[in-house]
Length: 244
Length: 244
DNA sequence: TAAAAATGGTATGAACTCAGACCATTGACC
DNA sequence: GGTCAATGGTCTGAGTTCATACCATTTTTA
Image 1 (cartoon, chains in turn blue, brown, purple, cyan):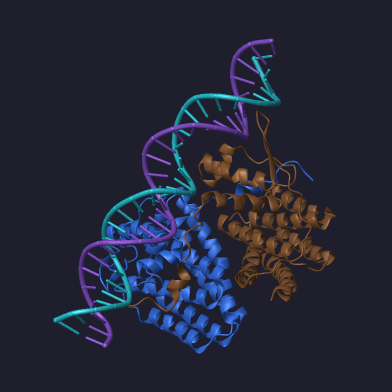
Image 2: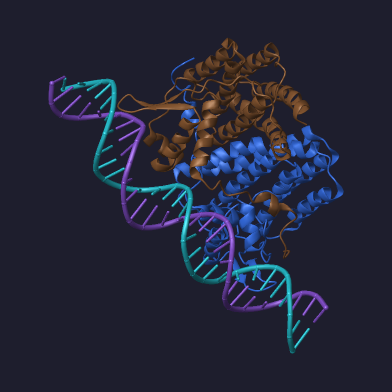
């Protein structure tokens, strides 16, 4: 039994406790959900009381977050029955804004996200393919895929792609896995908006999506994982070249 | 563009923002680090000011957490130069306490952790084997492995095993991956203490550890991943039978 | 032996968060 | 048209957390 902490584990294992301001964390989550297209343009967010319960936060705090979202132009709010908060943010066009200078820390975080994604999303595909899916779940996956194919503008395509990956994560039935996929997609989305990326090869990407859907619906975990790995590798290769 | 939120993603994507009390989160993290053996019996925690900085929390809040740890008998504190807070918690013997009744929610969370682990730890092994490791890192891995083999009492073996897996996570160089491994190991540790598990097959487990170390040091990612997958599957099969 | 340094211990006022109650507005339903 | 339910808007007092000092104790070092 040693009398000193092991190796350099301590510094690496202890993580910052959540950010001071709860309302900032709420803004973060809601803005991410909106940008990723979980709540698309024109959709209504849940009532404040419900959202507060979901985020485990007081209504007062949630309302601060909502005010910030309103301020930033992501949503608008109407009172009264049938009212609520509606998404007004149009999906941004990728690379619409010139890439701001990227801090080294952010660059590190981005590259880390790509590595983590290479683990998490293929794992999610594996789990989803191994799960027994009911008809509704199968339709959900096919609908998400159809929306990606149907999207014409780059901005819509980007959101539909996020939703597709989140849907795969949701099909795993594993909350932790979905949380990891969400976190990874949020960072990926941030990267794709900040980097003036060349037009991605959409048809190539769609062939991979199609193969993935097929493997999941057919219940071939190993196949689904390989396809997702290739998909992640292709995106990562493109992005790494532009970031690193 | 629809006018309603997509599918059932919203409920699944939005996560509770944080536990209300920052000091509870600190207690949680520190207690986990101590129980997992990151800070073994007799080791000294970092000074309060440093810990507060690491956890991004005020010293006042950190001290509340420390008081709780003292209260619970995990640590003792001495003042003055050369003083500090020392770990006094002896590692618990697995299944020393009769299994308390396990709530359905906890059971769900545990099963979820096993699924997530099946993704994360093999992924970490893959990354670690693919990374170029310097001599110190290689020695760290071998030392962690040696400590597992050297451990005689079940309680010490349990901690050494945790540290071994955390070490693999740390070797990936990916903060997100290490965070995921830490979270998974914390839940796994909780399970192993709460369930009156049969004596695990230590020699079997050690053969897998040895194969894993070999694959990582030799730089064979695919091999490392397969070995870790089998290792996770074996543990999971054992635990699932007792939990589910 | 005295000073300095490193550590935990204490105090204070401001900012944040919470829970719960109540108010105001609007649309749905009878 | 009237009633009511669902929704956002407001208020308040208590509990938490923070940042920043300053104090007390012990060991190291000059």
